[in-house]
Length: 112
Image (cartoon, rainbow, N blue to C red; front, side, top):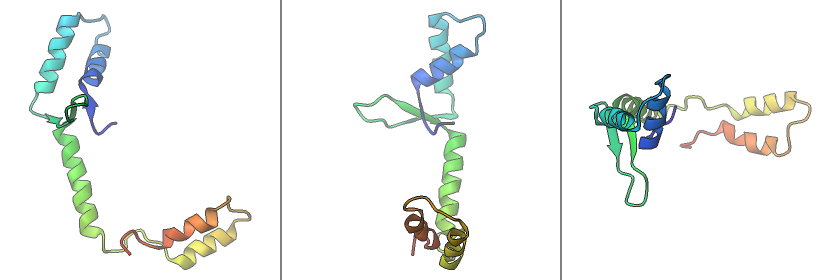
């Protein structure tokens, strides 16, 4: 799944749904109808970029994810204790090159 899509993506997906094919004019009309639906949101792509779209449902999911993350950012949720990281690394015979150094960041939360 993608967060956004262009008209060409909708065109390809809709065209693929017609096992017996569809005429170009009819396909264009079907895509126009789809993109005009109230559940589809056109995003500002700027002057030099192809227009992008998303759906109300996907926007609602993204808003819920961001809101939840913002509410819980100071809870230290999913932050590993540095001692646990060291214990797990020590249990492996040979961590990959740089693995020990990189993994030490796991014990620190992103907002610490």
